[in-house]
Image (cartoon, rainbow, N blue to C red; front, side, top):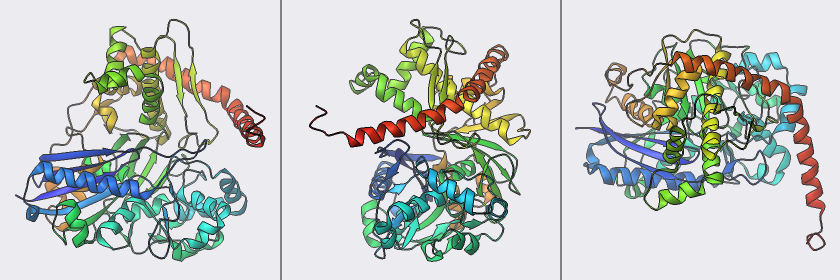
Length: 526
């Protein structure tokens, strides 16, 4: 039997799986870590955290599988959208932490682009009709403007998965999905770097990695040192799987245009694959991992999805976390059990949460957007609020669905950590009104990595992987709950519209407060 490894470098953890070529999951491992958030709207990470997590997860997966390394024929690696990418010097050493997708500090750079770059021309070249701090090119401009010494040291910007592949193989490359996701420097018409946009923004083309490869490309083989660390053979092919949300779509069996998939982990990326970019809807556009030069990935989604429930757990559910450490239920499971015990229904007995805890990207595109818990009273418990947090993620998905303006068929596909909760999956169906199908195995992007690695090495073809049973039966929406959620969803949308001006005002106040705090004398302030 032959085997393949799929590894996804995520925002809060790196997961690896090992599968046979008939689609059976043999072993898996997850290594967790935290995001650095030193200031409001900042989110970054040192690449050593990702590389260490990747090596540990692969090594442990191989050890758990107990298969002969000679039979492991390839490793596919995907990664989170790395924002700016990792600025590395001429020796390939990181200059500073990577500004990841969650980071929204580049507000001044966004304003500069809007003032100095022709918006129609930018859309024509990149396919994107929105300028926002989400995009990596704005974060690169932030480093250029605010850290001139680091800028001078920087040789190129490498996305997380491509940096990890370099560490394993010694080979530099970037895949089309990661290049396109930078947003402002990649030409979707020619599938290469746009010298016009790079020159217009004052960024040397030499800072963009080359070559740009497909997500089925063997970038190189494992070095002897890397192979020893991983428990694999030197020369084992390593495939550039691309940005993980796209790989997750591949893992759900999407090899043709038309199907809608929401990958919901720390963030939410809900996307439709098409042959041409969907313009004018505020969607994020970049090449799809499979047939990158022919298919386009159009997505929107919340900047914080699972991230807000994790924040709630870490901030307010210490009792449940302690019980979990003592051998009890997972803290999330305990919170859900309490909600069911209290018979909390749609709307959490009058609570609506806006999930904009790190600003928001598509479809509202507002760095100043704020999180909100609306409707609190003395009858509400911890379980009510947690339930409302879950509903907020569902509302955000519905908003993203509506932004496509397309008929999505009989069902949507949801992958990611949220699918571990049957109650949450049912909630997604009830809020959106669509039947929901989820992956049978908890693999998401990893499964796509395995498929792309199999296709890239020639061990598998598309017909082979499409025979794999990857999706479960549909979870149908409840008509009565959906009717109630329609009213709460209307309130959800109205709250943002009513408060958006105050959100901008609060951002200005917070900046004033930060300036006052920085001027304080630490001694006299005691």
